[in-house]
Length: 285
Image 1 (cartoon, one colour):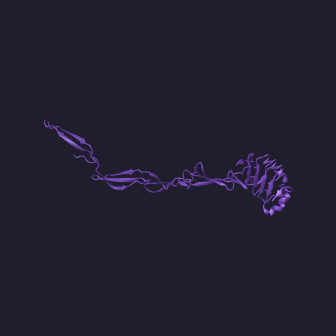
Image 2 (tube, one colour):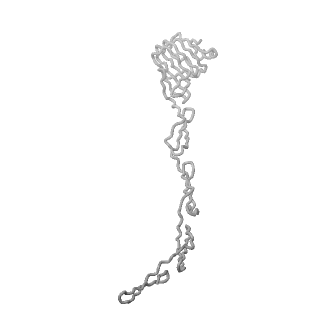
Image 3 (spheres, one colour):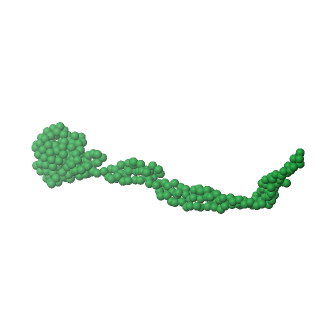
């Protein structure tokens, strides 16, 4: 008897000598299943497969387990110094379902370099210090304060003459000159440490005891000649005053005490009358 997928079969053996028989059962055969229905599993739902045996019509259903989401990230951006970033949205690569929205990332801090002086500060204008971000090349400009003018009393020596600041950034006094100079010009202004100063005053004893001095020219910005400025300059014969700003309060003949007896003071025509009064007793032309 042939075995089927429903029933066992049997085989009968007969002895050739005595004719005795023996029957042995045989195992059922396997079902000849053919799939007739199929539903694919999704990320979240199970699927199934239904098969039917072509011999005995037996049906078999097998469950197909859901695969689960295959997670991916989209719309991800990195935060920079210029713009916010985004962690990205989590979605399923298979079913394209949005699983989780991302979060905004704050802008990063700029990473400034050590800065470069792009505009030097002067006594008149402020300077600029420019920093640049090492990541995004953004720039940040900080003002540098104007330079502080040298204080009153600051000393400068120019062409052998010593000057001291009387008004920061503006005026100086001539306080000392070389004892060996014969011909001296007191300038209208001097230039020191990037600053132009008006020479407005000749200090007491500035030319004191200069026995070699014979001629002096006094610049246009002098407003004061202190007493004894030319004390004991016995060979001083000619003084040319170009300034028109002297008054009885700011100058007098004591400035030329013990100068040469024939000292001549030359002055601008328009102040000649006034200067004769100021230097009364001296020869003013």
